[in-house]
Length: 89
Image (cartoon, rainbow, N blue to C red; front, side, top):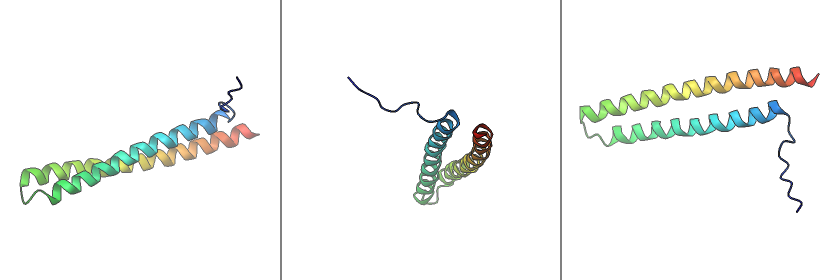
């Protein structure tokens, strides 16, 4: 049979960029879900200080995670663009 899914037709740096973008995108979705979950906990805490404290911890962890993910994305884009430029010539 002639099954050719066109695997491996891209250059390695381009493939790595695609994989890194996908992983960071999935991590970003997880962090946003954490922030939404923390907001839901806070809104439904009904004044319970323990639940509000838990929500604050989750919220700060989610925001800190988003900062790390955005930083990693910027660093990865910069490094991969330099690698792609260096391998073109």
